[in-house]
Image (tube, rainbow, N blue to C red; front, side):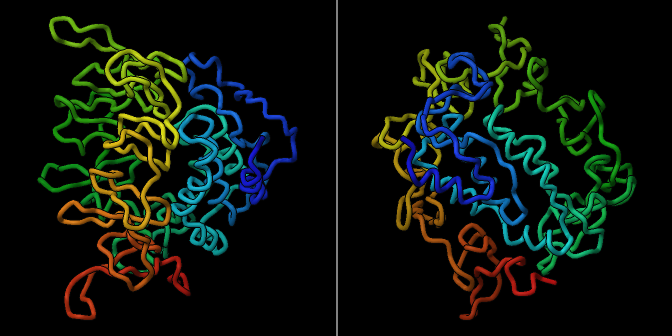
Length: 419
């Protein structure tokens, strides 16, 4: 049977589907294929997962973060990265990482355009296909409307003619226009239009915006190639290859994207030949280590040949760092999956590897006795942004005359929103 809280989690959004049959057949999504086929969906979802039977139909801008969290977390269930019991923590974790108040205000005040049609296409695309990639439709859900020299809070608020410079210690920040081709740049405070130019050394030894090198263009540094390319052996080479494309042709480049691995023939004379990008194995597929399974899965063995399985649940045995479901970690001493620690828990390299439960952050220690602490309110001490509820830590002179960090309200959370 379905758990009542799962139905509640789905129906808190206006995107909740109409009631469907309560029989839980465990039927996989249409493109899941046989469980050993190695297809992108990682096999059928586990029974009783509480996955909605219909898609999102209406999501206003003010509900975007909650809807996105739901889409991401149910994808994790579909893909074997999460069991139904981990949904509450997943929903909380994803919602915490999304700045709903800032998005809502930016849309209301005309700094962002929100396209509900694109949002629905984006959210519903999470129900099938890739278990790791963001659906292409998600890139156009929000569009920036602020021209250069206008105020911005979120990086996405600036129009295509520029970018939001977030490091000026101002609220609001300012949109800065791209430097024109041939103009001086430093790649940080002054930037080139990434769709046209790269900030590279010019003839006079200074950095200027100039068109980036394409496939096999000559280069002396990485800056001279497009962001999709790397400077290898004096030439701009593609960094990544798609399905069925050649990979590892020169010094390992290009690499295959997340759900694919480079299938190569055995080396000749100690040299590996180029290969092609092949989809990693799905649930039930043969594996020889975690890198041969889809990223949302684990391999049943470390050294010998095994089978790709869903991530290990609470209390299950584990070996590798990423064997466990999201929200859990592999306790190396017990070789079991444990919940991410909360207040006072060990988040050092001996424990959860710097991860904590939602609402907590890892406070680092010089002696590697790192512990999870509750995220802090405005005015409390901090040494990095992640310790603050606002996700903003600023450094300066403290009341006692010393130097350190204090949590401050994020620009979007201030009474006037910075405007």
